[in-house]
Length: 110
Length: 118
Image (tube, rainbow over all chains, first blue to last red; front, side, top):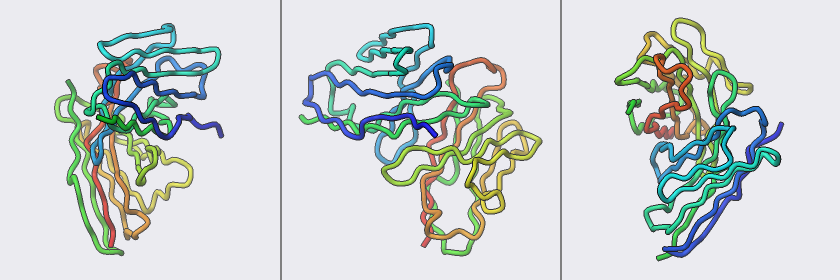
């Protein structure tokens, strides 16, 4: 079956912007999520976007949604070393469980 | 915000023994909880959907007799890994939805339990 796909690794310098991309599978998904996972820790919901939105901005985070291409992106402005983590996009499935992308490891160089 | 706890946070057990992991919603009720498994450097994969008062629904490829799920109350679901083997070593994460917010977008994740089978 189709997978939610993400690039595996991204390295940026502190202060630069990071853009993490995701291709999801279900065009009828009503909302899409971005989660952050720090080493050895659980998941932290970063932000979400409803399918009737093209863009959502929340402080340093900007989410862009292209429904035609089933493409979702997360931009982190002024990336800090504390942003180093794995970022997962996710879409809901039956009964509201989530299907997660493969995860993108963000490394921020000081 | 809503909090989900898991216990234990880390467990090491010998091959062939059974391990029980608890998932609790601390300040809300959850008719549905989900159990995920995450192998090192991999994504989370849904194992099963736990429904209060009824049998769990398992994903394809997940052995229901090996991973026993009990959702005995609206705030507690347990996952028991029976006859654990080293290949069961993984990070197990639960999540829950708030019953009073059935249409809410968010589900709440526990901090995870790291199981190591020696």
